[in-house]
Length: 76
Image (cartoon, rainbow, N blue to C red):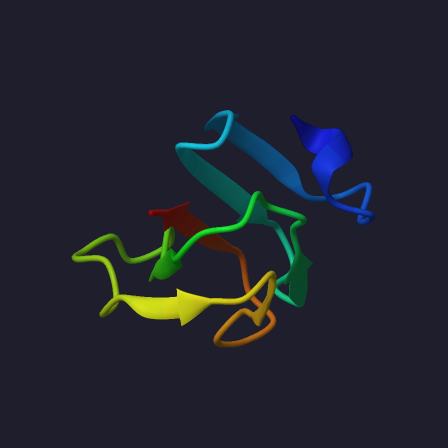
């Protein structure tokens, strides 16, 4: 589902209209056009592992915590 973002370096995996995992190898922004609904985002640091961040509302755009690689989990 990589075509969902404009950044050619992002990787998008998901089940349409249910859940998405976006890997950002250099941090940055996610712009993801999703169907209407209440979407939530959590961040995961693949370098250190550990728990997902607290859930926050996702309105279609978000910025990674820093310029390292990150995974965003987006679901309803």
